[in-house]
Length: 183
Image (cartoon, rainbow, N blue to C red):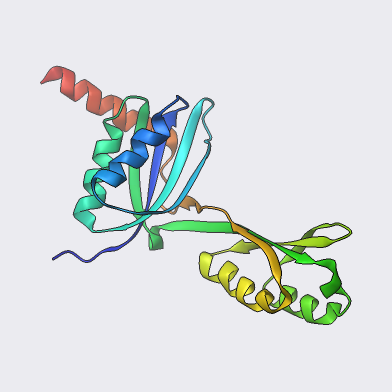
């Protein structure tokens, strides 16, 4: 039996209604949970990038990537293991300004975790932390004793370590289309 591990799937597509549902449905059909999902513009105008984190076996992640790539509006899909990407998440923590009275404790914790204050209002302040999920969770655990009003963590954003540009991926898609027309 194949060993399951964490994969980060990249999907490049046009920005059309329904594409997100079709992509996530591919995971549902295979009974795979999406651990994290982030969508943003890519380096190419008009092309959006989905960054999806899931836990799967190598054969299932290959199948999912191929099925997604065959969908209308999807330009390219690929996946990487965690060791083949550089990734981060952003977390925000909302706390009462009353905890700032003894600011030394909060300051020590923030310095330890390389966090910063993002906003200060009369009743609350917001701390921001960038890092891996385990790092943002560790800060949350330390802040919990102060009474965190709100906590939110973004999905993963990632860049592959191999030097592959989007233009190279497009060339690969075009060459594959030429081969299909010939045969």
